[in-house]
Length: 203
Image 1 (cartoon, rainbow, N blue to C red):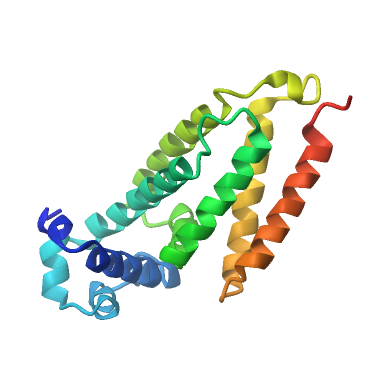
Image 2 (cartoon, rainbow, N blue to C red; image 1 turned 90 degrees about the horizontal axis):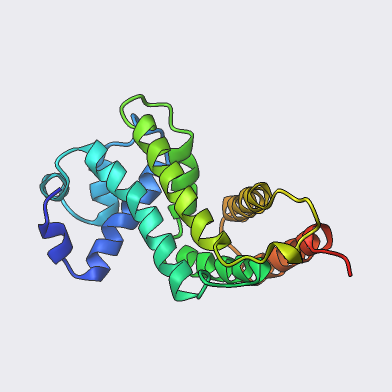
């Protein structure tokens, strides 16, 4: 990757990144031409290849950028270091709502990339996914007090269940197009209250 990309103004970087997310989220990796991404970004194809040497490099940059952006905003919203898992999940949803405003096609790209079958990139995506998922889980669960949950519950599995459900909820909302942020927030709070009724220790 050409470091000159990072010398661009942040707004221009975001335009190129969003163009990549949009095109890759609408097509398979193989059927996503660099020319279409360049057109969506308002730059020439040759300039896009100047910043990224090939399509795989751009694709993996965008994939890693998903994790980078997510961790940045989860940190910004104070998700890590929380003692209350449900407070952490709620703050996490607020962070992801801001991400959607800035990168509207990132969620769809993430899902598309996770299930991408192209042998050239699928292994790299899966390896990266498990690395970041385990990092997020470790940082989230580090300060959790197991006494607050139903006795005997598998906390790691509980977290995975909540994580998968929240990602599925987010994906469903994004698929509708023109995401209603207020509706999303109300729906997620309802989901959190449901988890509390199942997982919290009864007094």
